[in-house]
Image (cartoon, rainbow, N blue to C red):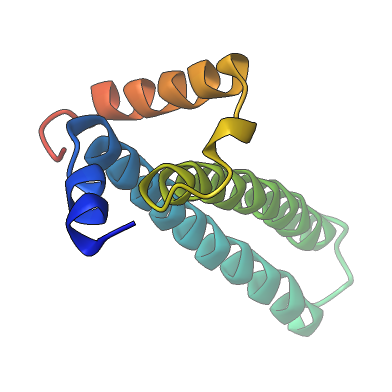
Length: 123
């Protein structure tokens, strides 16, 4: 492929939206990762609290549960962003694009459209 063909393919409307959606998912993953670390640190700092009262045991337990939830959200967001980025790269660079089934392409298009509709103004 020539550079001109690549530039033409990467600037198609849907694939620009695909890049935007991937960036949104990666940004969400980064934010969730930050929250995961915040709750991990809160949980770790709870060892300095007095243990005479059982109420103080709720704080690290809750922080650990929230850290687990945000870690899973991090994984899900980055996996979705990577899926969109791989689809974009496969199309633009013409690398195994035929390996994507119609069902996979439809699923990816639904993900992109859902994200675009949620953030129309930013997009």
